[in-house]
Length: 177
Ligand code: 5GP
Ligand code: MG
Image (tube, rainbow, N blue to C red; front, side, top):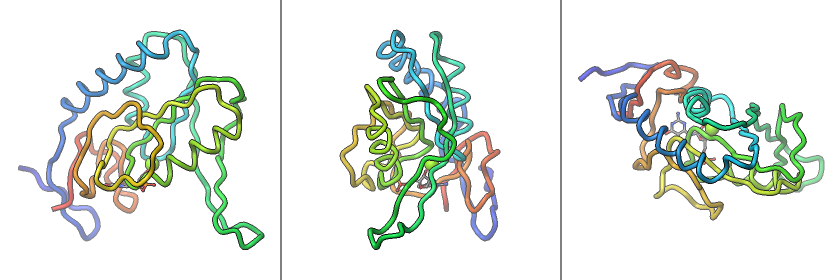
């Protein structure tokens, strides 16, 4: 078993590229069945989702658009706490079917914010897709429509996911030892 060292931590093999690929193919089929007639816009949340998104969209045999966003949080000028903004979204959202593409849904805070922002922009239908889902960590009630894999509440890297900048290029997924 090949251990990987990133910064001060050690990771062990967890999910192989082959297993991930089979699951990505399965959710691509489900997405196709549900959305092939809707000309959906896939909204890929950078950075971690880039490999998942690339492999997913190659498996979709129908017309679709793909765009990439980042989420930025800052303190509002009022004392209303955190304001979240979508960076990079130039496409019109109103009356469209959109699919949020995430690397991992943990507590759900990130995906919930994006979901509400897209709702404000009057999307017709909002679907959510994620490579990994941690059911025991999830605290929100946004439906996660397409899940490749559910995992325990552990920290993982690889296949796009990083630990402090490193590990995104690993082709398999590894878990903290
Ligand atoms: P949430 O907002 O759902 O709590 O967390 C989502 C974000 O936290 C993910 O997009 C990701 O950046 C980070 N995250 C959560 N769990 C993990 C993990 O196991 N590994 C890595 N690399 N990032 C994680
Ligand atoms: Mg993410």
